[in-house]
Image (tube, rainbow, N blue to C red):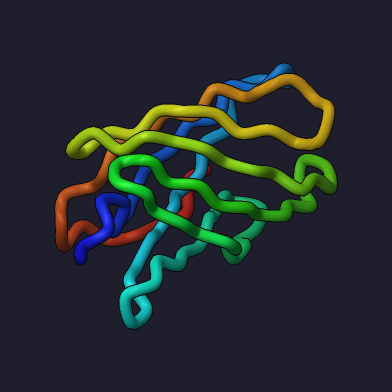
Length: 110
């Protein structure tokens, strides 16, 4: 079964300190979704990626702009995704994204 999130995504995270942009790349590893998130500052591996229909959840840890452990919960609708992320007791962050067309070169967002 194909996972709806597979591909390269340009994602915006609207945080209390401003909007952060990242490039997310999701791929299938033998039927299990996996991926990475890249900014100009760092690239991190996504963990616990799960797809339940259009709903996709994952975890990631970042060190910039500060050290955080984030939980994501988004819904994929065609070539868009929307949802939120949360870091502990901090307020939810609004997450939106657009899938890049196949074959487009993947570069970290800046």
